[in-house]
Length: 261
Image 1 (tube, rainbow, N blue to C red):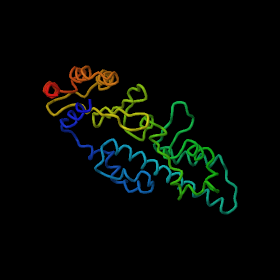
Image 2: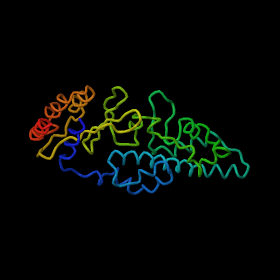
Image 3: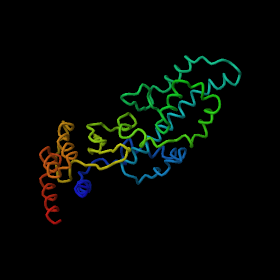
Image 4: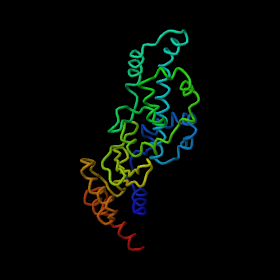
């Protein structure tokens, strides 16, 4: 079905380009921060796909969350340097207030929020349950020398990482370790595997559609997603057309190309 998806993407309806979106603007303004996490510096490329830009933004937001946390810790570091005792409750309260507007990821069966996905669950729990440990060895080195503690959040947290306010994706359905997400700005369905990588994407609405309807999208993409998971190419194409997600002219082009093969 890859050829079908490529055809849909190459004939997508003219819309506001992704590089003019808020997500891209955030990436472009902050992409230099990826060098602070060298393992993911390869994502520092404005020519990357929209999905890779979203991945890059998860890393950037994670780093900014880490910095916000550490900025709040400065006051407590000063107390410790003077030999003064630290009130654990006040520390937790101050950190929670600082992080209230920061994006995070929370797994369904886990108690703790993950604000820094490129760190393990245990390190994230340390940051928000026992932060005073970060003021003394060995954890105090995490502020400036954390490269050895960086994990691949896409491998570890999988497709569920995108089901968070780190992205603007909306989770629709999971089948056999692959999750379908929808993006309302790009009108694209993304199929993300349990390694947090993109399997495929379906770009909706082609350039032959003069006045497409954008209402009730979740209901309309449901049969498309079901057909994809059933590996039924014919049903997927029919669902795209029946739900007015592609034009009759696009349908004709798809069938015409299929006959040539």
